[in-house]
Image 1 (cartoon, rainbow, N blue to C red):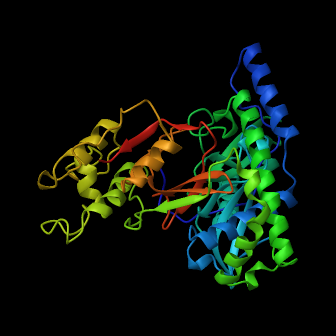
Image 2: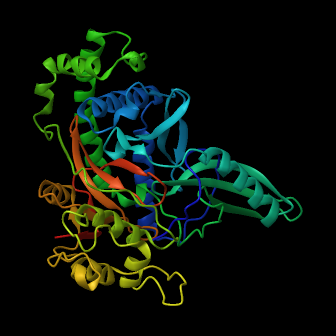
Image 3: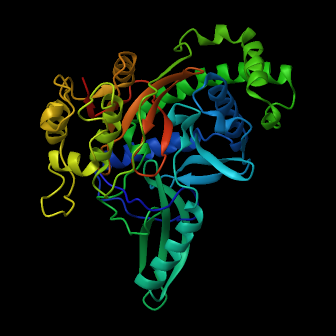
Length: 436
């Protein structure tokens, strides 16, 4: 678990040359090389990514997956390039603005090997990330590496969806070189082997090949939508902010005339979102599981359902129940799945949530289909990331858009961090709790 409740959000700087990979076997080196070759051979042109991000955003607006704040918002056509820590281009980060204010962000795929066109869309980061990251990076070099020159810098996603600045430094006297990553949330320097991970490494070469085929199939649908939209209005992809929701919905309805035949092997579009969760921000770095439990509790602990306990338990109360809060008032170092499960399962009268059938061992992992089933049965669930460090989030909805599968996450890392996350075919999550 992790995170600090400090400002942050998107973009700004980082590296090029790096040699932070531990010693690997010849077979592993070949596998890594094959994967990187596949990634680079399937890079997506930025214009294609921009069009697909626009179509996805408009689709989500007309379906209700994005709220009214997105109606009339416009994508900044110049994205920030986000790199993987292995050096490959990973995302095009598009900022979405309305009346001069940031509405949210879109992480558009930079390679077909990710399987989808838009990987993340919503309120992902906090508004001032670029500015803060620049300040953090300058401060880190000045205070921690005096006498070093910055040779290169890139913006990287080192702990999805968190970004940071990856810099190559050189000591001007000794010639010594260093690679460092600065966290955009708090300016801390991350440890290369334990606090960062490659987003691409979660996919095997075979999975990447399957993702490419999926992307190609979904691209057919996207192209049919594009043709239909341009037939309705030739300028809709460049001047869509002038369209109200009725015009956007009408345009999509008319655009689907020739699209149906493209969907034979894809999931039909659909969506379900549970409306009763209240977003919470974790109080301490390691309290993402605690804040996630508070968010899930907000569905069940209401005056009408629990008159003796009209509000969700406080994070301090939940933290203590999960063993993440010590009696002397000091925050603990996080919790573990068994202690999380104990909170969900214990009765409300005994300080828990009273969901006696909650489980985290139904199988060793959960899938998009499993999460959809939980949501269809009106049960939000906990789905966390595992690498590089565990991080809990509340899952509160599912969506299929143009064949692309998404889950809706309430992420406790930032205030109002709520976003749709793409789930590739066959992808699994090993960190979850079904709250039943």
